Length: 276
Ligand code: NAD
Image 1 (cartoon, rainbow, N blue to C red):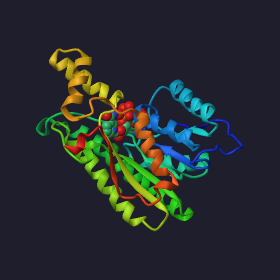
Image 2: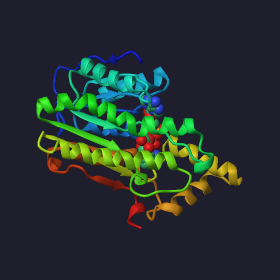
Image 3: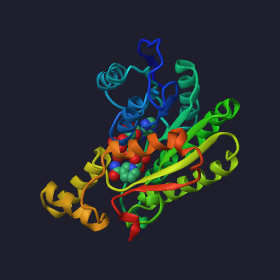
Image 4: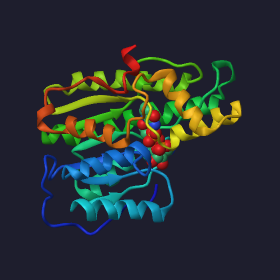
């Protein structure tokens, strides 16, 4: 568990549709999570960042969010591959910024191999982070949301929470499971003022996908740029990547009062991937 590092607190509540709300985004030191954190801050939410990475880069991201948007920003380090890391993240985030109104379960990892060659330890790690961590953070955060009568939980699943691809058994199983967990919690919390939804991105060019493209390009002996185009053409009718900000915009909408009756959904942001 890393040390919690709040920046200086801004006395005035930031304006915007989420002004006064406090959002924890897991896995927000990189990629989609960082994009979501920035978009929520733009809407006025105070932010708790979490994830792995170099301390200096994390401090820069944290300070940038606070300075650019006039919100409070904190960082709480925790390994969410472990149950106690998840629970302590919630406790520490609540201690540092007071409560959690918005929980975005975003941290995730990937590994590709056919089922018979899939290393069991990679299976365990993917299920632990991409699925079980969301159970543990929700379990710890829901009582506070219920007590206050307001909460938003957004689970970042994937197009792979709705359809499958070869070589991704653990990832597809975890993301389908995350969509199921989302539906159950949505039903349980339907009259508690707490909505629970999943967002299902298609391809977003982040370090997680850059690694897959580099591996594929190396295996075929082709340029990364050429492999990027092939990767999109295989799955995504709209032949361009979504950005972390596109995913953030969907999360932001789900957190507003306009989305108060949207719950239990799995919303694709996938350039047409799952329309096929
Ligand atoms: P990324 O690799 O850029 O970011 C992953 C984040 O998770 C990082 O902040 C990392 O530090 C953090 N993390 C990794 N292991 C952790 C652990 N044990 N404990 C705490 N934090 C940990 O990946 P990304 O592409 O931004 O992915 C974010 C989420 O979006 C994942 O759940 C992923 O499955 C999902 N997703 C991504 C894509 C895509 O095309 N990039 C598509 C669909 C879904």
